[in-house]
Image 1 (tube, rainbow, N blue to C red):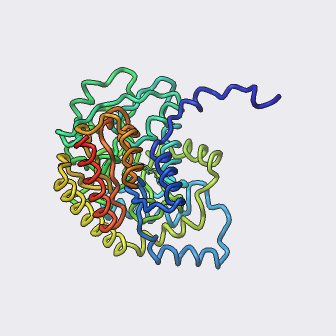
Image 2: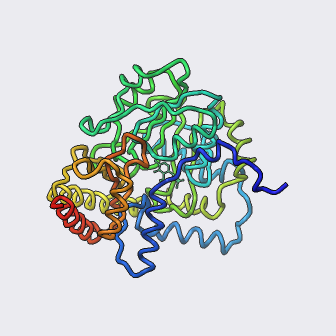
Image 3: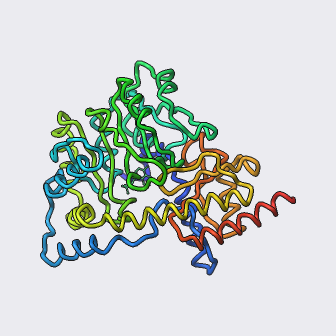
Amino acid sequence: MSTNKLKIPKRATEITPFYVMDILEKAKEMEAAGKDVIHLEVGEPDFQTPDCIKERAIKTITEGKLGYTPSLGLIELRKAIAGRYKEKYGVNILPEQVVVTSGSSPALQMVFSCLLEEGDEVIMTDPHYACYSNFVKFLGGKPLLIKTEEDENFRLSPDEIKKNMTGKSKVILINSPANPTGVVMSAADMEAVSALGLTVISDEIYHGLVYDGNEHSILEFDKDAFVIDGFSKRYAMTGWRLGYAVVPQRYIRTIQCLVQNFLISAPTISQWGGLAALEEADDDLEMMRNEYKKRRDFLLNGLDKIGLEVSSKPAGAFYVLVNMKQYSNDSLQFAYDLLENTNVAVTPGIDFGEGGEGFIRLSYATSIENIEAALSRIEDYLKKISSH
Ligand code: PMP
């Protein structure tokens, strides 16, 4: 039967686009046509992966260690990850609880797959990282959005969760430091979220990139929680596709079967590289963290100077969510107009849900020079549209 007669299933067509990818494509076309585009849209470190990681990967290739690994990951890497939890957060986890995956995105899918039944609600913030609600809906679950407000520092209040919880609520998904707001949850709030009696999934992928205060792992407060984490952001390893989940013991076998079927195993070269990251890249991480902090301060200061004061100062990750409502309530249109008129690419807030509408997200995973030039172009553009 010809495939053009087949109806594409609803669960596939309901996956919403990630508009920032459309912006990025347009920006690339403009670059190909010779335009000098500044990228503040991409959520990807501009640093090179540290040499010690690259060298370990090259050694892996030279030695020919290129077969599949065990489905849950190299035991050496799982032990090193478990060791980090003891060292950094003072929590004991077994290496067996660590499930290594090809990026943290599959880790999220595997964890949701072994938790959600049809109609189960997953509580998450609005705005939130765009993929979360798509993952949940794809598996028959329902996102239950809790709006967070700029003038409350985009805080996810445990009381607000409690007020909105229903008999169908099963999971609370938290993300600290958060994409797109950069907010870092306090220990007290994490503890209070854990005490609400639902299963908590904590996306900790931006850990290590915190500039004010300290990040906490959910495992400090809730031994039965799931953690999602990965190497993409803090070690500048996006293309290596390496992430992991930490899961309670009774889920290990279920997750193992899912991984065996869907992923087989995470990339072998990347896993050895990840081990080098944990063993040798602490200084590189500190260098990158210091640099992001400088850029964040420079960007916030610059935004303030051009009349775009950010009241919710991001404490981690590498994003600032900027309120543009005085200029536009249509963030997608605004992002396109800005790109066409100034060659500055930004992410429209609507990518992160209704709660992000009227905002744009700027990534400071780019040089101070680029940030400075982008601010100057944005300033000129805003003056121009204000005078019309
Ligand atoms: N969680 C959050 C909050 C993210 O921002 C991202 C990447 N943009 C991911 C998960 C997925 O990252 P990866 O699959 O590269 O580990």
